[in-house]
Structure formats: structure tokens, C-alpha cells
View (cartoon, one colour):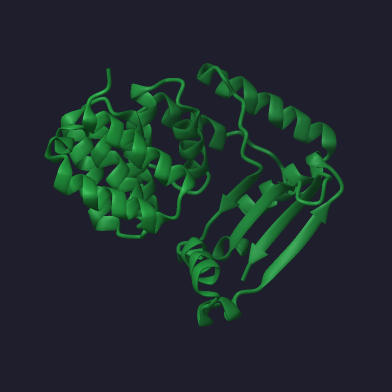
Amino acid sequence: MLTPEQLQINKIINSLQTAPLIHTLAIVSQSNLNYPKLKNYPIYHNLNGMINLRLFKYNEAVFNFKNAIKLKKDFAEAYFNLGVVYFDKRELSLSYANFLKAYEIKKDYKKARDAIIELLSYYTPKVSISKIDTINLKLKKVQLNLNNISDSKILDFYERCKNIAKDLGDLSYEKSEIIMRKSKFLNCQRHKALFNKQNIIPKFCFNCFKVVIETKNALDLIKLSLIFQESNYLKFFIRKTMLDKRENKTSFKGFVYC
């Protein structure tokens, strides 16, 4: 039988998944008054952190997630969420360490593994601390001449990389895009949130241009991704390659944000 506190936690989870955030905040406020024992539940602190993260209250979110971890040392989801906060704050070394901790605790945690893959596409840890670091360093040493990239060379490159990464086991990757960032953080998610909530386009966004490159097939998209990665000039810009499925068909596109 569930305790009153567990029932209240389920109520908060349901509200967070289905209701406007203001409704969830009201439930949490009521919970703090009526269920003082909730402070002993790690998941309650994790939920508070998720709410503060959605409100862009990063310091409060860090405090919540750390409290959750204090109560439950192997709380993989709290470590992952802490990694998300540090990612949004552009503290990439801390973000990587927490994603990695979540993955080490929960080996089938694909969400954490995918976050690590995305982060390693443009961040290099100063010290190798895991098997993933070792694999990443080996992948970066695989050579390919970009002056003459034939389909057969791309397939050979793919097989060499796959052979290095096979120690990870499951190599499936469900994300449809790869983002390569420059040092300046555009914080597009915040600007989108402002637009969706307040119907406001920030002045900053009017200075941003998007160049779209459409390729014929997946092999050409891999070629474009490698050019994006290796070009010294393009490293000054945010680049993205993606499988675009928005129009009931799959197209292969690259983007440069200037």
C-alpha cells in the first residue's frame, strides 16, 4: 500500500506530464505544507529539480538534484538531470561527468549514453576517465582524405569506426541530428520558449541567418558532416546535419547558423 507521500509524488508526476506548469507548482507548494516527510524522498527532490529546470532556475535545480543524490547515491536519473543543467549553463566538464556517472550506474540508460555522444561531438575531456573516452579518442584518430571522398571511402570509414565502437555493445542511436557548436552559446531553447510563451522574437534572433544544404542521400550527408567537423572556417559557426522527416518523407540536410 502506498504511503500518503508516495501518492502525492504520483500526483506531482502526473501533473508534470499532463498539466500546465503553474498547476504543478501549486501542487508542490501544497505538498511542502501538508507532507513534510516528502523531504526524505529522493524522487521528490528530483521532481522539484525538473520543475526548476523548466523554469530556467538553474541554481535551484542544481540544489534539488544534489539533494536527491545525497539521499540516493545511485540515483542515475538525478545525475542525468544534473548533467542537463550544467549543459544549459555551458559548464561542459561538469555536464559530461554527470552524464557519465548516470551511464556508469545504469548501463542500459540510453538517454545518458546519447547525451554523452552528443556532447563528445564537440567537447573533448581534459583527462580520459572512462571506456567511452578511450573509444572517442580512437575514433578521432581514424583518417579520411576529405579532398576526394567517394562513397566506397565513406563505407570503409564507417566500418573502421564501427569496429572501434563495438565494445559499447548496443550501437543504435535514435537522434535524427548531430549538432556541432562553436564557443558562443546562442541559447536557442530559451529564445524559443520566449516566443512560444510570450509571442516575442528576441532582438538577438534577427541577427541570425540559417544556410540550408540539402544532400542527395545518407552517404552525402555523412560527407557533409565530416566537412562541417574538419573545416577550420566553419568551426566559427554552429553546424547541424539531420534526417528531416517533417514532411512525411526523409530528406538529408545540413545547416549553418551565422
